[in-house]
Amino acid sequence: MRCWDLFCRVVDNYGDIGICWRLARQLADLSGEGEDQVRVRLWVDDLESFARLCPAISPRLPVQGVAFIEVCHWSADFPSVDAADVVIEAFACELPPTYIAAMARRATPPVWINLEYLSAEDWVEDCHLLPSPHPTSSLKKYFFFPGFTPGTGGLLRERDLMRMRLAFDAAAEAVFWQSIGIPPRANAELRVSLFCYENPAVPELLQGWAEGPTPIRVLTAPGAATEQSSQWLGRELVVGRSVQVGALTVHAIPFLAQDNYDRLLWSCDINFVRGEDSFVRAQWAQRPFVWQIYPQSEDAHFVKLEAFLSRFLHEVSDPTAISECWRAWNGRGRISFAWPNYVANLAQIRRYGEVWACQLDHAENLANNLVRFVREQL
Ligand code: TRH
Image (cartoon, rainbow, N blue to C red; front, side, top):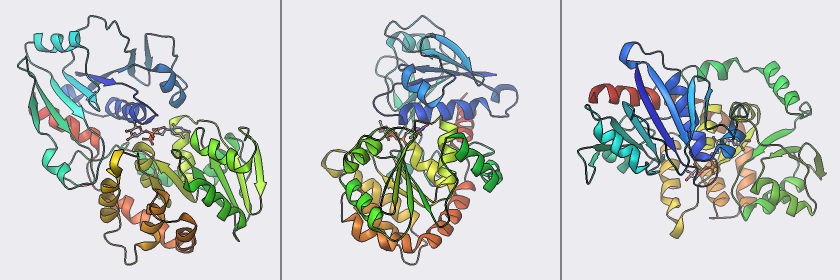
């Protein structure tokens, strides 16, 4: 049995803890034997944000056990603890100096890994698993890059995800809608989830939907999606209530527990997602999705966006329906011009998403890749 310490700082938003929580659960769920068995301790500096994704978390407890994981509050006065066999520093979150000293004191140095952000760019394969010596000790840190190709660390995916996704049929979907207080689907209604950063294209998209020929119910996530929808409507949206304008019904939903957010993605016809984790989950959902990438200064994020588009659309004969819509959603082009072509091709886009997810499913998942790498180092 090996002990793994996973460190997570919530910088902003939910991606940091969303990814760390998935990784912790997937590591704890590995069916390894002997030394490949994993005991996970997760250090998180912001338990309030964590509790939104996982309601079983109590923000007041310094130490608690959830889903076979020891969850510890990472407070300013870090306790004196023994360092684990494997240490994962998520997104260069900077480990406490006393913990680094404990790592250096071990007879066998721990395998120290910095988990990086996901990117579809080519350079990722060259940098994946590069070591970096620590300046004042004999410790070494490895950079572990998630990615879409076999030369990278792969993607987070539960070992039974595709089976669970397949088992989620129309009856399960109906139960899910009822559980979050959404009425059954009306005939021909298009159901859309909307999770985004502040985005100038939101009002234009809502206006187009309200004036369009298809009945659409949009489920807005807390934050920018609900706030911008409220502004467009000229009245505050109340969670659980719907407002109708023309063909559009806007319905604000609460922040869902992470597993329920997955079910939401599985249940909608189109998902607007953002950042990293919801973007990956939308791919596993096998439903058409539109990605708003995390914006960076000097438009650096467009390089990442295009890198993903060229991988994703590699085998699509006419990629413009998707690429024009995604670019417009990210500020390049008009969403009202791109949307009609997108929605006209929805059936094909959906079929293509299924093929894409099956291709990704053939690759090893991130947790298994991590365990294999650790085994090679120790
Ligand atoms: O919240 P995000 O914008 O996180 C981002 C990205 O990770 C980005 O790369 C990083 O640099 C930045 O944070 C700091 O989007 P993301 O990555 O999709 O994470 C959202 C998480 O919240 C994801 O795990 C899904 C979860 N979620 C729920 O559990 N319930 C919900 O109702 C919603 C809307 C999201």
